[in-house]
Image (cartoon, rainbow, N blue to C red; front, side, top):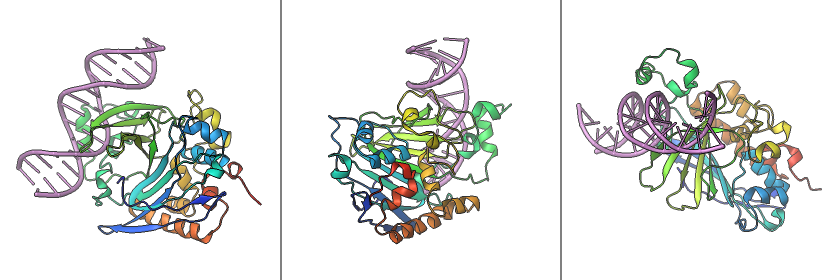
Length: 319
DNA sequence: CGCATTTGACCTGCGC
DNA sequence: GCGCAGGTCAAATGCG
């Protein structure tokens, strides 16, 4: 899924001047991909995080919104699901204090399990066990594997996923949450393994996968799945806790986005869809289409997109 | 000692 | 049905 035609659109002066919406169909599925991009941040000067903090609020917003504080110069984001949409955007250096960064968003909803295309990425069946923290629920399951089998027949509901492609030397991006690695697998056609992490907070089922792009070893693909149902740990080492304003540390989807998915929750219709428990398959389709419309409707929004994704307090409002 | 990581085995879905 | 690939489990191990 990494490279389904991204298209660029640019962001200058605090507003999205050129938003490119690409909608493609893959085997019956509609893909929406968004990509926000910009050139490169000079890592030699500062980390991505530093850059975000020291130079531009907009960037800081992005970073906070995306929950990333990596040493990356480029950040792409994507939501996986059945439909993917990509939109690219260029962040002008002027807005970044001389630095630019790249953020790509891929929206893709997992349509039922039938979608094979995205399917490879989709977890086929995690819900059965992962859905719940293992130690807490299973109670007396006898054999670990035996349990899995029982859930057969039920289609597990796939959680929305949000992937980021970041330029980073470190695999694990500091996003403020504590993760526990529970597996690692070699990826086909890639010399780099994929690591699986789970949020260590009890009852939080959020997971993330981290893998390095074999095409560009300097980039790390981080895929988040699920939504945190808790605040950011206060003990985290990194910046996140300190970086994120309290309002962004709230777990509530209705609050500020403290997790990539929550960004989506800020998008029009997302709540609506979620609240109506729309089928996973259509969730994003309907979600992101409106999203595009929204973007387009705000043709020259001052941050149109961002504003909706991040707290306005983090966005620079220009007259 | 508690927690995180490693790692091989196992399970599931999918394509052939 | 078989093999492959992705994903997960959990025992073993490491670390602070």
